[in-house]
Image (tube, rainbow, N blue to C red; front, side, top):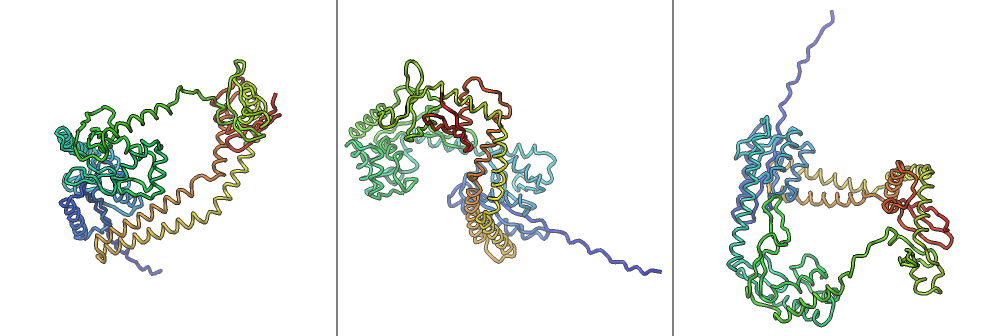
Length: 512
């Protein structure tokens, strides 16, 4: 009789839940920063105190607005790690720390639930892993949203009260000033730059010339958003009333709706003009002269009337001299002239073109192409073969993917070291954020490399042409929309038109 030996099954070891925490403070004040550090310490020790839990990391955004999710880098990193299957559970102090927008809150929790990830809100005592419905979360999310709007309204009320009383001037100093004790004081280093800009403009220099001179002189200002001086900066300085010691406040406002984004005030809310609110840099008579000159130049360069563009505008080129064609009227008919020929017949012998003849030539090209679509189909097949070969030779893309993979591995190692208590939480966050910043830069570079190349663009435009012709009928009258969709340019020769299509194909049609 055969002998049978029973091999007992190995008891499956209970797998620990990978638990992460998310913390956020919405202000950079000392108290809030202290709260941030407290949340970091609290969740780190709390998660490690649970034997059935494994610390999966702490994600924390410091001193950022919580009204929209896309402004929080670590929140987005948390979601990315959840989608990558690295986290089973998330701990958050309250819904208002997680989201102050009901839509963001519901969408995020719904996505996490589909991934099998529960979110526990400590203050509200909600565990989404045990919820049969999102109703309660929706109510509380709405409450958090209202809390954010209420805070915003209170701040706006405070600002407007100070505006009415003349106490509120600005939150930031413009070029030429510094803020001292909540008032604007001329900056001895930058004030001469402002004076130079006003005097130069009154002397007849254009805004562009002033910007070029400042760039050549390498004059710097930390208050600019860019290193270079631009015409927009010069124009803003020339039209800013603060340089005569006055302040027009509430030029921008924030509507009572989420997301909280500032808009230019075009009369939706009151503005307040405060005279002599701070020391002036520019005399009022000089400022007023500049405003008058600005208005004169605007009126001089304003278009006298709206010119209706022809579908042929900016598409026609002379095949003899390379000049563009311009539209004119001749005997009540629309005609097109080569620019050089118009200046002098000896400069270019290209004769006059009647618009009706150009339209007729396009109708002929369109209808011939409609009957011979096999030309485009054969071209498309050759391009697709070429596109496949090109993709297999992109070593630069492979190299970038390898660098990204290496940084991700470093992040995993950092997480393991923090889980074992080998590195401090602050060091973990700093190094992880640095790696994530490098990863994002590499991914941006990767996206640029993966943008459609020339072959891909030709493939797409050839497909578009085939789609346009697929259900088309023979064209009896010129259709501007069809022409603009198909033709990139027309090169005109004495005996023919060369129609350059959007995919690079060139079709010739004889001239009448």
